[in-house]
Image (cartoon, rainbow, N blue to C red; front, top):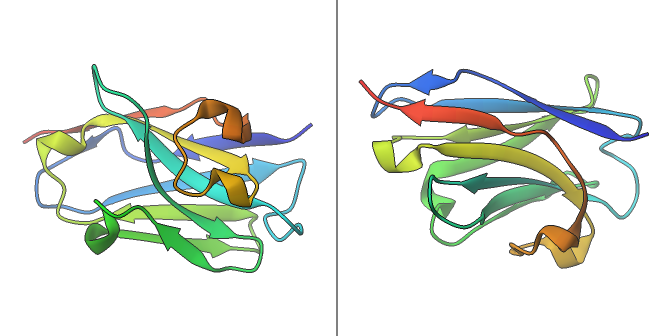
Length: 126
């Protein structure tokens, strides 16, 4: 059974960098075909696809956050990491990691992802 678990700070101060890690069990992040995404949902709003890293290690980013986002991986730990720079209160959201195929890139349809983490609340506040 494939499981994803997000971890990281629940509170970040404005202008700081948000860093979250997704730990994957039951599958390898280098498995052929899969793309490992970060998705967020601000309060009262819809899902926003932030970016992904592929089984080959290539990174892809959503247009609106591209300048502030970096996604990397540690294959030895079977983890991938999100970094979001210069956060503001508008970055307050539940952050999810998820697995999908190439069709999941830039996609906010939950059905495009076959496995999700439980999500982690991140609040940006001083």
